[in-house]
Length: 513
Ligand SMILES: Nc1ncnc2c1ncn2[C@@H]1O[C@H](COP(=O)(O)OP(=O)(O)O)[C@@H](O)[C@H]1O
Ligand SMILES: [Mg+2]
Image 1 (spheres, rainbow, N blue to C red):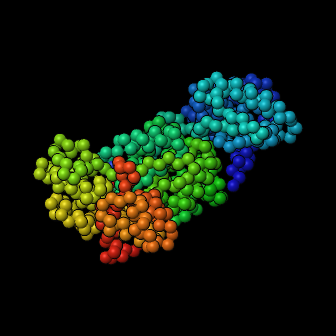
Image 2 (cartoon, helix red, strand yellow):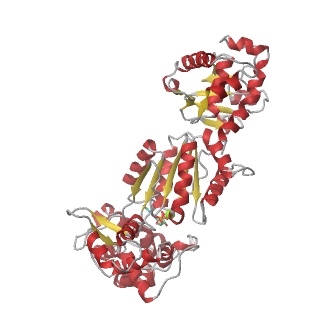
């Protein structure tokens, strides 16, 4: 990949233009009075001028073709060479630009000393130091060159006047239901996005990863200046396909090398990408994420996957179940809002039928929530059958939850239309060794230590049994309790029921569901 050189070529025309007389004037450090003064996009439209490419950073707007640097619509005094250096560094934000590239492009056809670059760089830094937020924009990289390190927004077609601005983030899916019980998670993930450029939400299927990712991105959009895009990987099968889908979401032309074009686009535009449903391609996505993040300093990734990517710099949030009363715990009407699983279940029942739960219904609802491990998707399935079966019957039949939780939304993803389909998808992604161990662990019933699980499964798996065990943990098939001295593990009730049912009727692979 050679994004750096391509970027350099892109700024060449404006440099070449400086060989004219105006260049001499600008080189003195004074702004050229000959150049048309364009205040901002709105003004340029008013006089019928076409919008032109510009970059925004730290409250400044740089238009390389117009050769202007603006602050609040006012032109900043900057010499031609300093402007050239700035244009080059900004167009390559996040990459190191070498002394030789700077000299070649800013002083074309002239042999100059490295000292000239240093002098101009000092002038440029002095200009930028007028504003706190811009003062540390350029890092010196010893023996290599310089790097522009602030977030940059690239507007290849200029800036549309604010009066005609369109909705800021139209690309995020709309959440049709009220979100229950995730305020803390959303806040934690939002904060994590401030600190880290790669944040992954993990957890079992149906726990709400996608929902929380979208809700977080919506919140984050309130303060984020860049582009936000949602990219669904559920039908993608490899890394090349993943890069292609991202390019399509960003409308990046892909006639050339997809990854190269993508890096070029993401290198200048501040972007948050939500990469949704990565569990079936974690390795290629990990490789792709590392490549993109190392090339594009303005990029942030919010990933959802059953399993973490285990990529450099990844910050992981493991999404817990919604909350429900413990076995035997009393619940009254006033407590409903305290338990998010109960609230969600009642919400969903009410969406299809008139439903006012009375006090004696609450223990049944609590039991349903408990048996379904507080997993929103499973709760939605159960709620959809209340009108027909009633709470008592549902609670009683949940030991065979896969036979009754069969009525998902018609418009849901195929793997979200029945509970069995949701599990088929996840189970189908496991290796045969992992599938065998899961079935074995299902026979345990309650909690167990890692040692017990590994010892009792020895001989059933070809790989080291402990690797298989921890791989199941990584893939969110095991819940872990750390209250006691040694961590205790267990299968979620629904996972246990599924694994037990596999013994009776072997499932087909979930891939492609
Ligand atoms: N906190 C929540 N409040 C309300 N509904 C939720 C919540 N979390 C998930 N859901 C619903 O549960 C279903 C599964 O959620 P989803 O985000 O697709 O799970 P995952 O991405 O983990 O498989 C969706 O229909 C979603 O609307
Ligand atoms: Mg999802």
